[in-house]
Length: 113
Length: 113
Image (cartoon, rainbow over all chains, first blue to last red; front, side, top):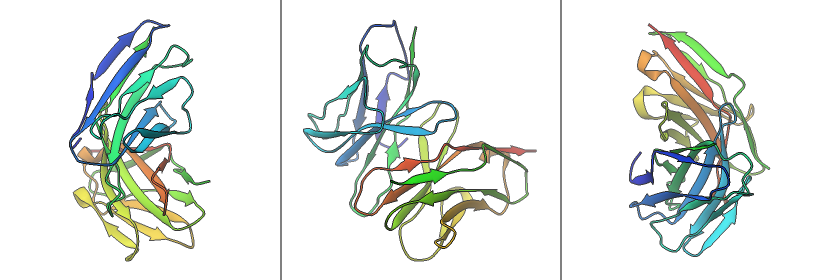
């Protein structure tokens, strides 16, 4: 899991509540990413950021929000507008200086009831 | 648009036998191709990548993959499977000039003793 930490590992929330997932990296990477993983669907991109104070929507951004105030941190908020928030959430980062690959954190499993 | 197909949901192989996990891709432009492995409730671990050069790429844990431009494939191989190779494997593609990856839906590899 390299130098990327996600907390907590398991998170439980009641429907209608917003929840924020933490992602921190000490790899000095410029780019950071949030993915959602559901069984049989692979990874789907929620948001990504290539530089501080800038981010772009991915394929499934509705019901989610992010911020990138520091290079090391890229928190994801799952809002009450997200219709089916229960999933495994993965954060990743990449250096984009000739390495190209992304490095992943250990993930947060969110359960909303 | 870029896409990745992993045609097999599951691959079963006996320990000691060679294994192949298939991946085909569709992109406009030069592809960068990646393989990742995921163990239960963990993040993704990078195995290997093709950026340019030799079509046969060697990676971690004895895995290798062959880039075939005419067949738009990037199959993952290992000469002799181990029970510990049992995991979920993802193929991903990225196009030169873009920072986001598109993942396949994953293939579960089961190696029996």
